[in-house]
Image (spheres, rainbow, N blue to C red):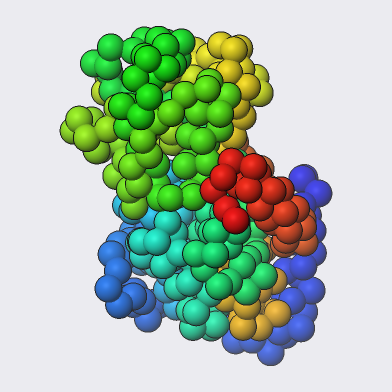
Length: 352
């Protein structure tokens, strides 16, 4: 068994030993939690149909769980939240809903996670923007103001264009951009977002100028591109690959160091002569005020959800690289990433 998973089982066993007096509860639900001014939809079916794999989780979690997603429905983080939520629902026997609270390049949703009721029934999915907003002075909080539970995955960025775009290679796009500075519009998910940084990396590596247009999520940027509002987008592989499969997009380059085994048809930017590597990460958080025992239960349950066959298969199908970190390593990673992101954004002229 994976060492991390074994640790989660031991942590759960210790917690349960401390809760010897806990009475067993049935499969009843207290209903969906609703979030003001947000889109709240179910990540799984009603809990009457859920089949918990670990009845102890059913004893621990006594009502429905809400996952806050800072990005629009249909994007990569939204889909990831719904998939991990579906497995979590099976494990706990409780309804799990996803609440999309968008705006401010992720700031609205991040703040909602931070300020949620610390009862352990509201958690959230975060993206790399949690570490790109503070260096710009766009938020007054950092990851330290909430509690990291586990990291889920990393996501390489891609350069994508509509299927009917005149550009069939990254070289053709770069050649046009050099002759027409600022004419091509690149869609991102907000000024200073990780995908904006990836666009800046491409511009720096290729020596070109693009006009960045912000949207409230990767799916919104993709939709805008297919509607002709923008010419290209730097976005996550999971979003672009779906559109490639439907014949609506072309991926000209992937910002990974090497071609990915499951997506070897997509050439890297590096192999095409443009030294730009970049992408995002996603993971789970809860409010800092949640009690330690409940934090341990959440980490254990999410760890089991992560290692489930259903979630691992989802990552493979969606172009997300599973990259589990427990609380301690996740927190350490975030500290290091914030430091390097601050330096990089200053170098790219995106932060003071």
